[in-house]
Image 1: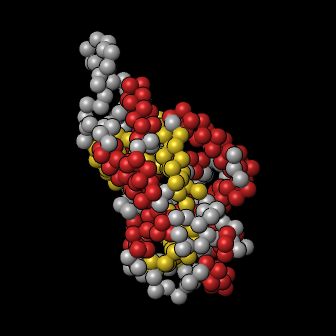
Image 2: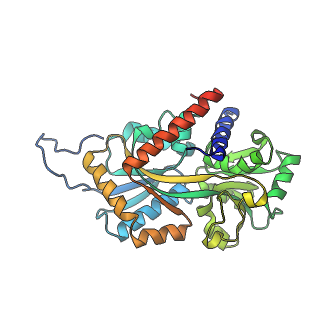
Image 3: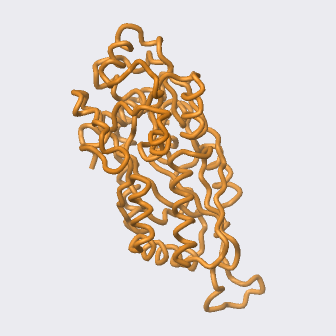
Length: 341
């Protein structure tokens, strides 16, 4: 169920969206029934529906890397980046052109629900146009500035925004009203400011948003905490806060939470793997079993630790039920606000 903070996060995403509106069967074609077609027979593509460097991209690459290392999949595995509209462009193609393609999976997170339900800038396609296969991890948001920024903590940043909401440019790797936008302005919202007055610029993926920050085209970005680790280690950025309930480990162990700094902004990012809507039962069973084995391997557990994620696995059935509950709750909130599509 949604906590009070999660409810406020969804409400905020919805209001922002309004205000910123500016598989077929794998059986033999001869009709002869076979016990098994030996899935997979072809190379598997894992799509990150964003540019390189963001959370979806890192998840897709870690997923394929460990599947190959553990030999749970013996066919070649490739990652493709297909950016556009915070994932909406890819979803339109996937739902209409790839609905029978057992050999193409993709990774996603809360936008697969939010983008489909909001009125303004919505996607006509959502998780019901897929086969949910598994939830893999959870991550948190991070508020990030350049290493040489004048801002050393979150409150000093918000005080500037309080005086002049348009002075700073916030950026993220998703469209207005979607996840990175929410992460970017949630602290301002919790600080008592009007988040719709903030200047937000969207990019296709967290990697492009970080590039904009480093290039001086943005003052602040909201993104996945796990995706900024290498930039932090390289001394290129400063992380002002993370949206976790307590401090994270590894390279982010010295970064305070927003709550520590008196701003009660918490936001959790789940990530999962999806297949096509008409995925064959054989393919679905293969992935359900393979991913269940994957999350128990030492290689995967090490990868999760290295990336700074937290493992939170749900199998296909559990993940589907989880998404149903999330959709109902989001829909109820949007209806209450008159912002449902």
